[in-house]
Image 1 (cartoon, rainbow, N blue to C red):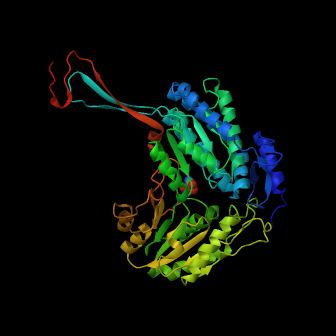
Image 2: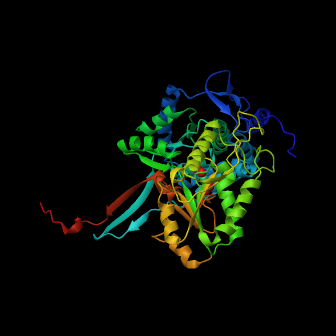
Image 3: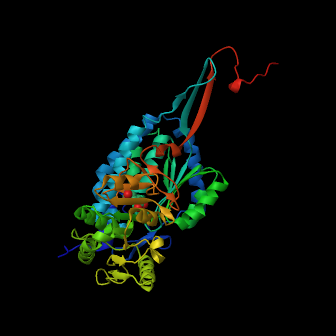
Length: 509
Ligand code: UN1
């Protein structure tokens, strides 16, 4: 039985109080803050005005001039303190993520853990922003490559990872010497304000070396994002969201030669080969497809099952879909919470109608309005068995729909997997080494992330995160993603007395 719980509003207000932002709400007007748990509005928040946005960008440009001169390992110290403050706030911030996004508590806490992990990574990185020394063809010369801070970094984030994606960008930007201007999703402003308060504590402990305005939050809608994309004082914009959003932002950045880190849609697939460990594959598929109510960029949306095991695997998957516990994410028994809002539920219904019209067999997908009333969007995840990949299967619907298609040959499955616009994440389940290697090879998955015997979601921060094609091509978090936040300079120094020219050119006066 579900434990008796506070109203969502009271729960949220108590968490905000504990996080140190007791009264963020204005009387009326502004950006509404709501929880998908009951679908109700909790209050309204001040919307950043044009003048405030202008001042914030100006401040970031000014702050950059000071912050870039703080040695990188000192900048890392600020991120170390941020990691400490996040550790201290993990329980409350994880709960707030749950309340504002509807994801279950362990996923809310996992998101905060991801923030802590990237802080640790960035602290180490702050002593490793290495350049190169390069062999020069000229005598008595030295050539090297150094990395300098780039400038204010605009970060636009989506509702589904309202705080982790900011931290992937902010932790790296800070150690790289860049101030951050953050426009969170309009659907999740409260978690952004909470992170701002937590970061404020780290900044205070760090002291005056961190100038006021190093980390700023702009609350509002699309026009704020457009402003960040268009402003010449912002040399880099990192934007997470739909491919449609990326199509708006990318040309604006390109027109002013700004850098873009785009993390857009995914239409992620997994292949279950004949030799797969079906127990493992079942658990991986269930989490990747139904976890976070199907609202991760990396959510599993398409499954290709080798025909000889189709009849062994599908009944088990159908049972998992029929029995998964859907409900208020505050109930510890819940595995699937609500969708973010009713328009997401409409999108899911439309995709299922299209699949039905193509002759698909659909299990689940029904709305469960008895859980928390009519304003909340609880739906049973849908398992959609298709004859071939077609219709809505070719696009991303940000909801828990898993399309399943049988295949005969691996080549055919890989081709089908790659035959969509997006190229974020992918997996194969197999115990056959050669199948695994083919999938990872140049002729295999065309995605930014390709896994073996692991679902496509739940990437660790140590790797570069992002994808190809309509996913936008950006990379965030680990590996050498930091290079996007810095500018490279090649320096050649002549310590001799003559002037040998490169390529043997002679120019005697
Ligand atoms: C996203 O959905 O925008 O790999 C990010 C994952 C998480 C991040 C998802 N680490 O699922």
